[in-house]
Length: 70
Figure 1 (cartoon, rainbow, N blue to C red):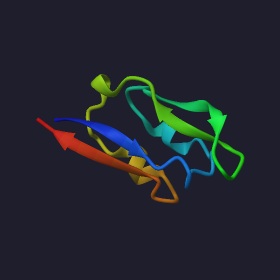
Figure 2: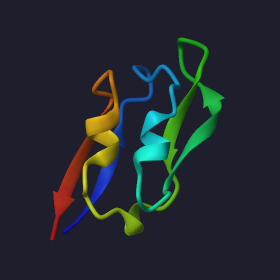
Figure 3: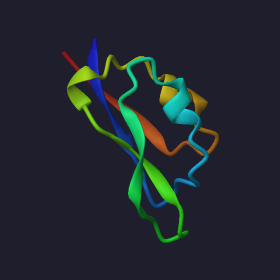
Figure 4: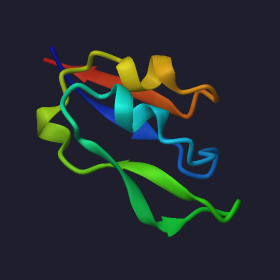
């Protein structure tokens, strides 16, 4: 299964839990900040996403959704 993470950056509090949960190491903290003034997670290589949802499951604030495709 393939997919891509959709990250709602304005809701992100920058806890970095999703980064540690991703088995493909495709999430990093952005250099930009959101309206809360915190760095938010971004995906650096959507092509490597396996749609495992570990990032979304780990996120305490439901900031990430996985869009699956074949």
